[in-house]
Image (cartoon, rainbow, N blue to C red; front, side):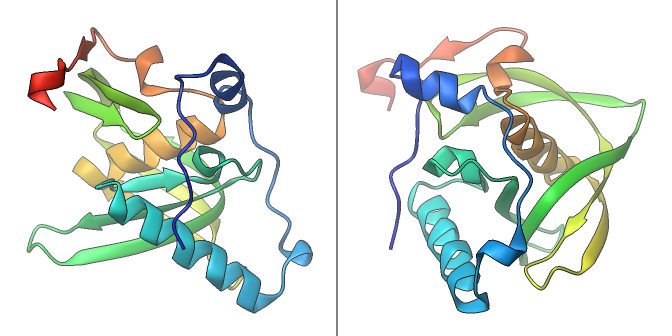
Length: 167
């Protein structure tokens, strides 16, 4: 079941999105509940044509996100990361046009680290450490920014709003 995505179109929703999320507590959930939450978030993300979705984007004040990004051969890889932290970043930066499901119809060139190391927990509460580069590194940074109360607008060099005929 898909969930509505929280957007910046309402001031109270923007305030919520700009608030740092609370640590995820696995003890609050049964395994089946957690699997359903992740499944629902994945479905919501895909239906919205996104590549990542943080918990606060669907109204949950918890520190986790889902992402699905293709590798260099085009194979899709799905991630559900709880209590993520970026522990290492490269000095090299890459600026690419970026958008956000919570900031509809707005895009802008956004600099991000080309490589990052992300640490957190998987759905089974096992530690994970992922070294990512390119699009995956960008998605990880974007989602962790969300969980820290940030939006891509804070880093974008400029922004463009699509006109109705361009949507």
